[in-house]
Image 1 (cartoon, rainbow, N blue to C red):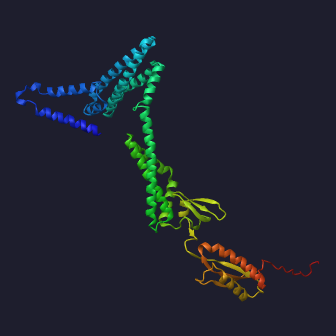
Image 2 (cartoon, one colour):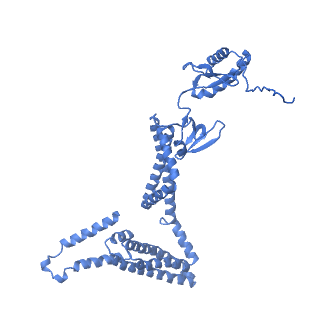
Length: 440
């Protein structure tokens, strides 16, 4: 685009200079006034049709031409290509005649003509692209594109294998061919590696910055760091492709179309994404917490934008969609630092309840993981069908809940046995009442 603007400025400047140096209008014949412009236009067309013009100059000079003028220029460049192919065909015929003495000289000529022909063919393609860009009719452009396609196939068919091999070898070692392509590929790989390294560094800096914000959940920190990593990496790759001359503008159009289509196809997934973001922002739970949700319970192992991974006590992995979690009741057992341990011990009706309460108070007082504050509560909670139920409610750290629960349960059983306090099992007494007059 810069070259287009530069060429246009040169043309306008040349026109301004020619106008300022022109003879006054009253000294000229009215019929001869348009001649300078016509001469200048003819010079421009002649310069554009010159086969020795470079691709950069041709690209600049094509800017002001109209579709009709580009049609004429396309015919002129087609003639250049035809003349070049005619000369190549004559040399190929001479090679087929078997003149071994001149074979090396002919192949050298053929190699030189092929290099020149490549430049002419590229300029011809450049003219056709400019013509199509300015609205060339399809029926006018089709003969030229068909001619290009046919001549490429024809050249391959009419060229002997040795010449093809020689040309292929030259292409491989040339900077415009294989060597340049290999160098560009290595450059892209190096750029991808560098962008990966830069993205990782940015992610580390982001994680360090987020660690200074205590109100953000660990899940949200991980999500933001991952999003920053991929954003930096993808933007870096697009910049690298642009530096290597790849037009990345169509990629944005493709991404826009895909996002519109995926928005309808992945509605449920997008719902999980929105629910995951709400969970990360409002943080009803975090990784490592013990939760009960959606009929499942366990420790939160990991959370992505679409699902949450829960690990149960027996090491089972449960994957729950975020929309199911956000739309259900969430019980976060690990939200508080302290928990109350609820234990129920049943003793027989014939046993002394006060004595059993004293035994439990002693066990709670001696346990290292039971907290002194809040005070534990031990009392007769209910009179059951088969037992007197004593409620024992000490407090502990949330991480020590199950240790206290299991320790007190086992210790209470042993002390009750030592103190002669029985733990009854469910039983039913059946009384048979005889009916008068019934046979024994």
